[in-house]
Image (cartoon, rainbow, N blue to C red; front, side, top):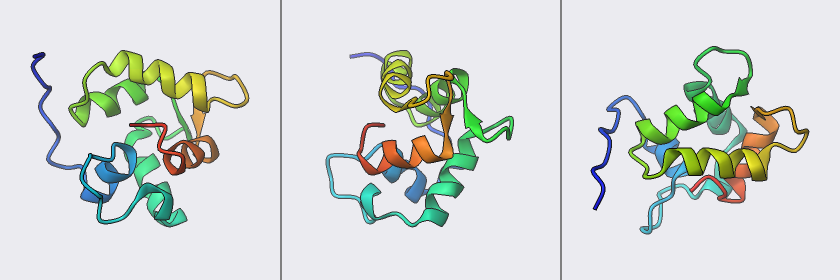
Length: 104
């Protein structure tokens, strides 16, 4: 199997469970996260604080969480979630992706 990347110790349970739900039931399913929790998660990965998640920020998020094939996952998130076609994921688009579990 492919080696996994090292997971960041600074990522909270809510953040990881919301974006990448495991096969085990999460304590808070992504569809039940509050608006405040989603904003906190979004800001965690919006490293340049421009209010958008770029391709690089998405890929970095997948890497930090130890997900395999971060490039493919990033492409999929942008393909499915970028509703306005600007090449970025806004807070609104992110919320929809998380609630539909498209970011797994």
